Length: 318
Image (tube, rainbow, N blue to C red):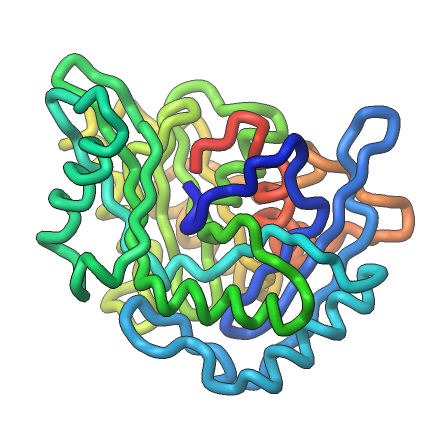
């Protein structure tokens, strides 16, 4: 789901931007013969410490450096767009899956119920929170909702960066949600249950999706104990014991622009712990690339959440 409501217009943005702790990336999308095509892309590195994603504290520490990178990215994709979709780090939000036996018929009552449920675990006053949710799995024992909670002031930090560059962020959404959307917008939802491991420079997120429905989400910062393979193995055990798991039909590893050598090592460790093959995510199944864009693995990982956001209207779950 979006951390901010999407613009109520007939068409979504044609440019998506991701602001991560180590880089700013952007991609533009156009339609050719009715098919989506990534027409331009750009990535600019950020100096260490310029952006430190946090759920509760200040995120932007070097506004000038981020603004300069954002400006260069816009120039490289062909100009300053007035409206964009914005991808932000998973670390700025707390994602929960909550279930209600009965769902209030009025939206206002449901809003209050969701906020009451998540306020118990919120790390800051719920009055300071941006709370959004979408329906998840519908089961015999109730309706599940995927809820994102972020501090409103933190979301506004990212919005202001874009506004300073002349761009309005009509959609603000989490990176891993849009990697999932890239999968769904491509070949469609894999049959059965599938596992996504999304690795960024300062965190890793694990999602389990049942068809097109998110049934598990976990995020860990870079300072977490144990290896990523250990965490994924623990998740797989929980999936079998608590989520009636019958095995993953597909395991996907996405890298958020991380070095290919690092991703290869992670892939080998995951394959060994899970005793199954681990696929890379190729956003070209959802949107083709122009001939002049080479398809290096690092680029494909960088493009995945951007493509997922731009195509979020097609079977998007988040």
